[in-house]
Length: 173
Length: 201
Picture (cartoon, rainbow over the protein chains, first blue to last red):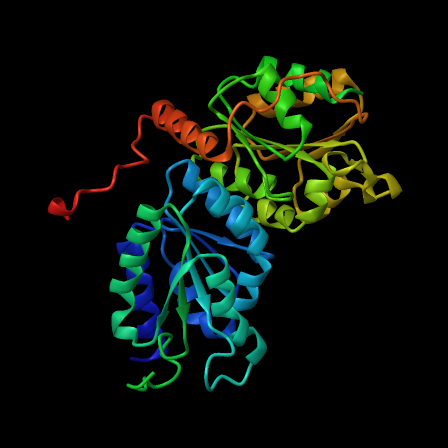
């Protein structure tokens, strides 16, 4: 699956999960996915200046009936922690967090961010799944939204380069 | 100018607008003047404007009012270019600027040293941004904003005085559920659904 097809699969998962508002901040590895979000007339796309405001925007939209997701790099997830804790977790608000996993194994950028990503998610008590095989993305994203709604909490999907169609899938990962 | 006087004027004209208010005494004052399940208290300093933007985008035919503070908006200035970019017609963003972090021990914010939040809003692209310099100007500005159909930003300099009002009557989770049920009733939509028993899934 190439990057464009992988992005389409992820986006199909978001649509299938009923997501109708997506707040984003670019990473070069997310380009194809953001192009999908931008080109869909049914989804409200909110381009952000800083990721934490996206947490607030998604919370507000959820309170009036929208299912929401954010798409950001793991650096943006770190930027969002106060909003995640004192709004999403404190009020029990479900939002899907699609996080590009910079510093993942074999990735030449931000190895420190990569090392901290899962421990921070664990510390916040956020359940997360690492997407590797792009074939699985749509179904797993739909399941993640069910979990978010049932648990009334954010759920994170870590988007690796494999899941984004930018590196070949290794069966032992 | 007293914040409470401004809020009294707002309560006269707010109607059934959804109101999002920033952490601090302002929320208690507003809730005493317009007690409603359509009030949402924000606990994350800064996110008032962003939560209000999300509501305004999610319910484009319903007025949404953000009651922000200077300390809160200074922490999330980047919400202004995002609000300008999305430009929801149904959002009224009011900032009560008392030049201190009132809920955090009344230390000075940058606005007392000359930072102009209305100027920042305009420069961010919120064209319809203005200061209200008297109670009359404020009353007029909110009336115009709520009767029109355009994104509006109103700044008002207020004293640090607090009104004697009761504490907020509920916790965050109850606030959430009441607010969502209120939206369901007003908009005649279903938002919350019970979890399906396993035998149905």
